[in-house]
Length: 55
Image 1 (cartoon, helix red, strand yellow):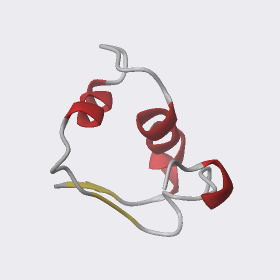
Image 2 (tube, helix red, strand yellow):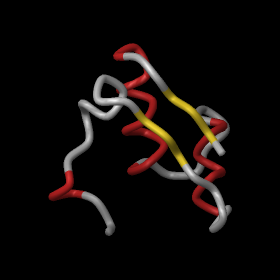
Image 3 (spheres, helix red, strand yellow):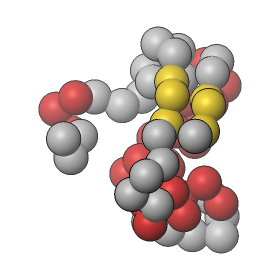
């Protein structure tokens, strides 16, 4: 489980979801964890869109 509240997390949330796995973004390793859940509030999710998601 990963929590990412607040507007200041919006950019990193986008990088985690859409970027490559990288040591520059340690949370990007969550791509390899099928059981991982990411919980966001509206502010931390402001830079992602449903249209560009993989769901």
